Length: 299
Picture 1 (cartoon, rainbow, N blue to C red):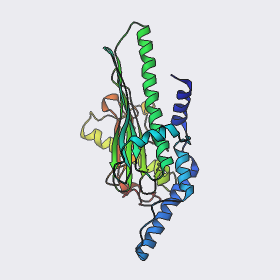
Picture 2 (cartoon, rainbow, N blue to C red):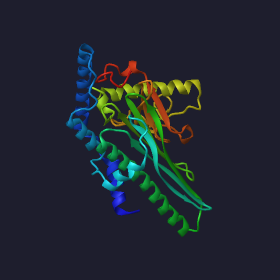
Picture 3 (cartoon, rainbow, N blue to C red):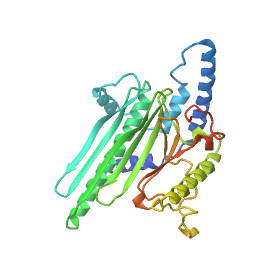
Picture 4 (tube, rainbow, N blue to C red):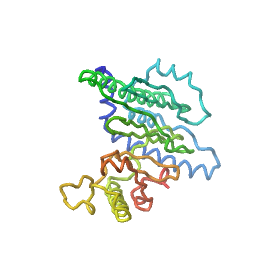
């Protein structure tokens, strides 16, 4: 794989969520709530854009990638679907032979007024997909060098949520030859045009423990209903040293669904045997209501 591409992919995978963004998003939520109260009194339309600082923080969060002019220009050929943000198929990487097959679809956002933010996310998605494709081609070379074999990869996206406030996008990668899979999620505030991080939803890190305890309770309840629902968690696993899930990561994969509920996501093998597949747990709002910065997103 090209060294520059690998380095860009590494930056995307390893970038920490900046503390500044958490603060700015919290402030934006508070400002939005205050503005909504004023609007109710004054019967005025809520402004669509946030401050320049919020836009800058959002842009910084999506890796601080410099906007590619050729890339942005190429998106002009993709039709805008309405005035709100939408997801469209922008590009597809394909390779097919008797024993090799790759099909990786790349999403693109359209309709955001903040074109720099939009282009940065789209560039991120393109780099992710191209890195998957380049890795597949490297695997092809290796398999050919050892006498051949069957390998395949499928990549794509799914819009998990699309309502007036939230657009949530899942990007996935699945190996059709060894069962490997991985998912990534972005949850976007369409009204304020910013990327929502998990920590930014909460006052402090107490959410980690409340969410984790609820997930463990859900796992145990599922197991009691059907023992095939087996998780690597205390209460099911007898040997403490074999327990792999104790608490979620501060930046655990998540999205907000169309009902305004927080959904915590795990990849295949992350908290359970592979037969359980990728897992999602809807967190009851009652569990986290005292931890929330506001109810702007979570209902």
